[in-house]
Image (tube, rainbow, N blue to C red; front, side, top):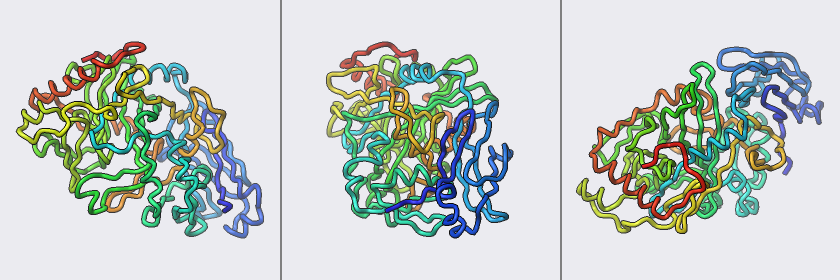
Length: 459
């Protein structure tokens, strides 16, 4: 099947270069389809128009001196809007890619899963290019400017790279009938975690994000049974925030949608901001040789500051691992497995264990997002080209749809995303919760060696 190629991003840094392959390759066919030849275009950042003009297939804008962010390109034929797409551009950064990579290696977290977790973070190449995906005859339906289009799963990556309309939705109602993505579960021995880096000129703060991607979010319990939450594709993140002088200020963990009431063990603590902010350094934050331990929720993969059971609407999920000591403290049923299983801990590359696997740490390089990949290197993953798609990857039945990085709120408006997070206060929890977390960190550390020590204060 020949897929449409509406817009190609050639460069998105200090210079933005865009081409319209359909218009360039087949101007008569384009005119017949859209009743238009040359198009008027406008590039904006928020409410501000950055540049505008008229094109017959090529657009180029000098963004030197402009801030990084999600720019919106709108194409019109007279008064009729034909296309709108968000394009993430990072014209300048104060740190080099090598410096950002070194920073990411220092702060890369330890991920702690439940004993029953079956899905693990995959690379973007595996997300869209797994053998089961490429061999599938299934399709995903997308309502496009040409009408309803059934995109073969084997060609989904190509479609995303050249058809990144901001309103496109990968419709799950007729998606993955063969349960292909349910089969792409990843391997804890070969997991991948990505990082990205942002700078906020107004506040002088910088943001180091760590991203995990999953092919499927199965949820747990009654939510999975009712089918109101499970969905194809999932992305989670945590963010380290640094002040103007480069000192670490806090970690922000994303859990669920804004406005959803989240309860920790029913009544110990609750919030509805969807994310929490923990000040650092803090001796109460569990860490292994300087690397923060972050609990991952079973099924949903949401990230939490402490292991335990969290309730969100009809969803109840276990994050991380609960030892018998915490169960005794709270008067709840003891876990079947009190000790950590091999697959429950994913270590950053700087830590090595005889039992637990270390994940691959890869750069997201949102400063190099483009439709055609560059050659692979230690500091560039060609599979990131799919992230130029600015529409909705995640179609969640019964909930709001979601975009992938770099078009989620943590990248589009990082300052507000961080400042609007719920401030986590360890003093609101029993002291035994903190001791439980530190005991888990000591257990992991006891069988872990490091290539170098991080800068965060170790537990």
